[in-house]
Image 1: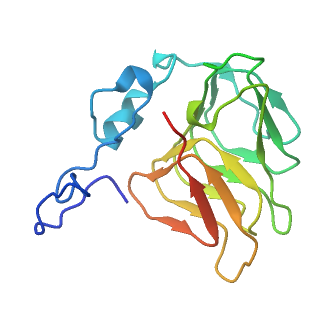
Image 2: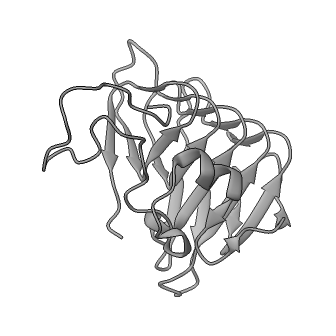
Length: 192
């Protein structure tokens, strides 16, 4: 999905009220409850707990093996979770949120080495947002668990054709200008 559905007929129905209309994020982050096109949400950086997110803490290029606490994090280039799993620790705060602003690409896992985004101490996948400036690749070799909503300027790919291992996404995958490709993927959309 790249932000617009232009199908004409059939008209909207009870089961598909947005059929033939501009796609709106039905459950935007709390401060952004007014329906907005995905591209507007991406450009405004409107994420929970931040209104319009200011530049945050500097985010390392490699997150594998780290534990990160709630906040806004920025990296103007590429980010990887390849050298180990990433743990997001809410420190017991049920409203803890994370915003990761990544200028270029996000890569999770390497060939034969799926990686995980692990939630600790009350962290919730519905409070994690990854704004990616180009594309995101999640466990191209299959397997692993990823938590959070990715809003990617370009495409998102999860696993690769021919891979039998199942990858689990606890969140949403929203590509703005290119396709989202899923292979052997289970998506659990978090409750709001």
